[in-house]
Image 1: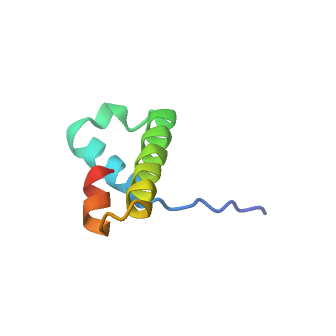
Image 2: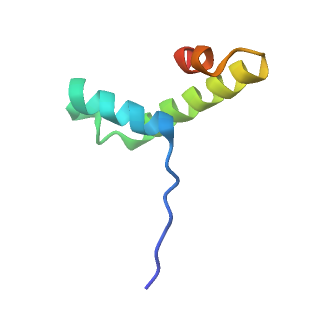
Length: 61
């Protein structure tokens, strides 16, 4: 039996939660969710690297 690990993403979970409440029909669009979560993570990391606080970086993401 093989098992695969799925990496948990804070931004992916936040987006999926938002979509489930406001746009449940979009929950099946995995490429969209993955792209947006990756973009949010990139924005967050860039903001922290530029010296923004973690709460500021999260709001930018």
